[in-house]
Length: 86
Image (tube, rainbow, N blue to C red; front, top):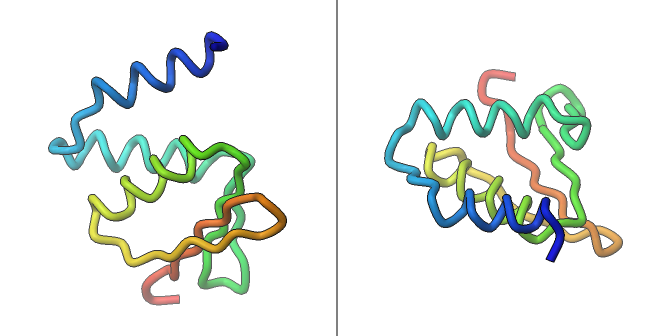
């Protein structure tokens, strides 16, 4: 396993989603990455080829009660959710 994989696995084991503030900060980290884009002014698209990243991103959204769905496009996972009020 690579160092990156080890770190992700360790974070996943130790991460407690009970602290909503930390969950929001982690989600913000995903959103400011180059993998997140805004489409049609009302959808955010997060694209990755990593099972870990899409699963974690989905867990964060669900934990914050943000409705979302996952579509698979060309073996890449895309997680789209609507921006409220847009």
